[in-house]
Amino acid sequence: MKDYTITELTKLVKQSFGQYDKQGTRHWTWETAAKDLTYQIGSLTKVMLQLSGERWADGKNNEELEWQFRNELADILAEVLYVAGERNINMNQAMDEMVGDDKKKVKERA
Image 1 (cartoon, helix red, strand yellow):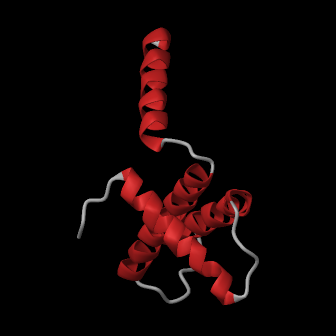
Image 2 (cartoon, rainbow, N blue to C red; image 1 turned 180 degrees about the vertical axis):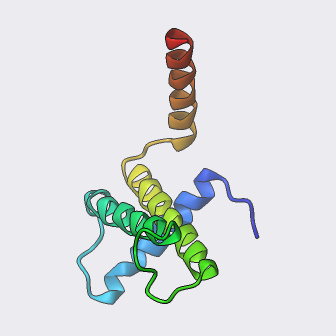
């Protein structure tokens, strides 16, 4: 298993999403991916409820549900990276800024 950088992951995601046209769907834009995020978050929530026993697991065992959980998290990350890549947002910079902002908030509120 390779340990990817954010830049490498963004490139892979853009290549993968670029293949969607071959499925007969409309070309995916950053707007389409951003709108699809709510669907992906809903899918993650469903698996979380299945893992906790609050929702019927549809005959899936814990191993299958854990795989689905990882897959849904990866879907969400992929869409975020696609949106960032299409909008020319440097996610390394954005993460640095977010962590710095969080540290500032915690310090101010402590």
